[in-house]
Structures are given as C-alpha cells and as structure tokens.
Amino acid sequence: MKKTQLAFCFLLVGLLSSNHLARAADPAHSDQPSVAPAVAISKLKEGNGRYTSGNLQHPGQTSERRTELAKTQHPFAAILSCSDSRVPPEIVFDQGLGDLFIVRVAGNVINDEGLGSIEYSVDHLGTRLILVLGHQSCGAVDAAMKTVAAKGKAPGHIQSLVTAIKPVIESTPKGDLETTIKANVKHVVDALRTSTPILKARVDSGDVQVIGGYYSLDTGAVTFLDNK
Ligand SMILES: [Zn+2]
Image (tube, rainbow, N blue to C red; front, side, top):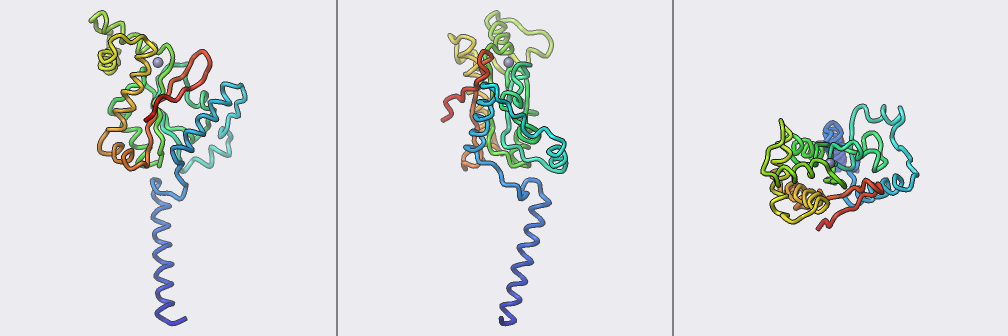
C-alpha cells in the first residue's frame, strides 16, 4: 500500500472513531438503535394482549435490568395517560423498567410541563412513538362535562382540567361521555402532532408517530383509535 493510501486509511479510522465516541457520549445519539413506531405499536399491542389474556410476563423488572439501565435509557414509547389508578401503563401493556416514558395527568390533557417531558423523550432519549391514552368512564372528562353544562367552576386547581377539556366539550356538544373521552384523545393527539418546534418537524418527516388509544376498564383492552 502506498504512503498516501495508508495515510488516508488512518484518517478514515480516526474520523470514524471520533464520531463513534461522540455519538456514544451523547445519550440522544447512542449506539442503541431507536425503535421504529410500527414496531413500538406492535410491542404495545402484544403486551396488552398478554395483560388481557392473563399471561403477564412482567418483563424487565430484575436487578440485572435495573443495573443495565443505571447509566442510560431508551424507552420505546412515550405515553400521555390519565392519572386514574385503574390505568397504569406499565401494567396494562406488560412492560418493565426502561420501556415506557410516561406522563400522567388527570384527563390526559397536555400542559407545558407534559409537553416538555414528551419533547425530552423524543429529542434526548430517541423515542419515536407517542401514545395518548384515554379510558372508559374518565372521571376528569365527566367532571369537566358536568361543570361546563352547569356553567360552573370546579374547586381549586381542578378547574385547570376543566379549562383544558372545555374546547373538546364545546366542539362535541351532543357527545356522551365515551364520545367526548375519545374526542379529547384526538384533540391532544392533534395538539402534539402540530406542536412546534420539536414534535411537528419529527412527525412531518415520518421519524415520530403520535397515536391515540382508548382503554376499556371492563376488558383491559386498549383500542387504537383512528390514527390517520
Ligand atoms: Zn381518567
């Protein structure tokens, strides 16, 4: 090999190594492959299937997994779900440590802190699927509907939930509770898809997918809503 060819090889190896180290040091671009949205949806569906059929695997809950995750995390999905005690995402999707990046707030409404959290998951942790998860008989949506119908005001900071859900109630005037719960999910999905500057660009490029889901308290099944 000629000297010039040899020098070129060293240069190439050097560039690749430095690039590799830079990527490894940056949690946003680590060597851990990010999970494609379609694969992430399949993982959620499979996990929910195990949950509803009573075949829970409780994956990723060992001390080995905890140790493995101590330095980094790459959750395959971010979930915005209601705080309702009957809808814990890790259980209903049969997932473990490091799998899901979760924001929970009554009525699965979006606020700045929740949005910032989801953006962090996408921008820093490489998450490419965002699921907004509503559920049957959501008390927050029910209370909001009753408060709006009575032209009243909820006590304390509960009013902030009513304020967040009110536009959905007004745009589905004849909707019953379950219709309004699903409309609220769709409303938040749309808000996330069009959120600038981070999420909209990722969604438009096809890198990130935002979908809605509805959890049945009766069956434990999650129905993925019309997600066009
Ligand atoms: Zn709820």
